[in-house]
Image (cartoon, rainbow, N blue to C red; front, top):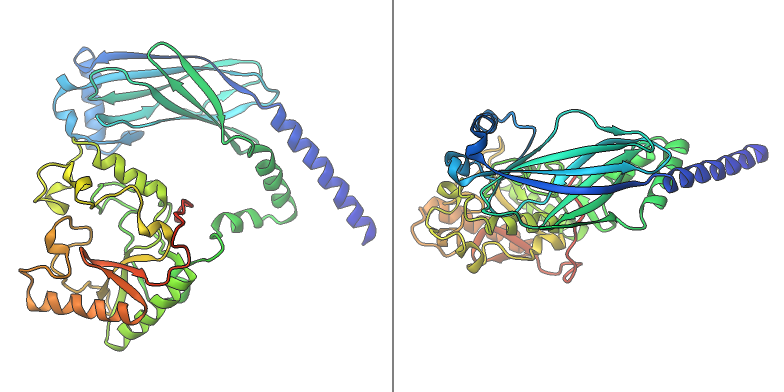
Length: 399
């Protein structure tokens, strides 16, 4: 046993040294970065192909808002090309680019095919953007490459005449790669378990309430943004342990009355809130207006009236958006859909039917009896009265 321990110790040292060696010999540089801006009318055939790909949902990229595709005169193609040089001793594999979206962007996409940059060689990598912007603004492009399966990143910023590049996240690659390698060697499932683990103090609601219905609206396109929101990697409801235990009491009380809890959203990463802000600042993206905010004519009012804010109580982990449902999963009528932007969503709204009003009151009684406070402007929104992290806004992903 002693010999085995010594062997494993020296093996760990050797692997650690190897890991450090390969990291220090991974060096991808941006030698050049340039952009070409072309009116879409000059590339009409390509514009039609992109528009058709968006309509058929076959575009290999990200769609920001498709409405601008109806007017070719408003759009411009912007191709950003980076010249990458691998100055390390190991191949840079599966190089990817990610473009920071701006208001007025329609869609962006990468060149097809896997890119491998051998040591000492140079490759040009491009990302194409179709935008309704009138000019070329400063842009951030996130470059991701893989060495032995571990992601390495740098951010390159395109200006009007120059660019800059920096590694990110700084100082984390050595420890992360060493930890991943050793975890995979001595406990193959440890890395997967760690990736699925939640920060201390948080739990998956389903672990405490097995019959809860998780209709997580931000994991998918059934929401006011119209697409999966940043930070949602799985349709899972997460809360602080204290909030989940309190919600368990509400679920027990609802079950006694013949109902189940149906959750729309729980913990919300700050990255999702930032996504909401970008959406609210984009006057062209109004594809969900008819369903979620038909009475708001100026999209700027969504921010002014507080429907979207820079910080959300959800990011503290003890706020939940929910409703009541029948045993077979049918939500009770409440008068509006979840995330309705308007006075009708308020608890004291007029014009509700007797059934809708009684259903809202029942949900409120159950939640307040369990220790939650209602938000007057949204019938679905409840926050634990004594939340454990009242001043902390978290940003780990939902998974």
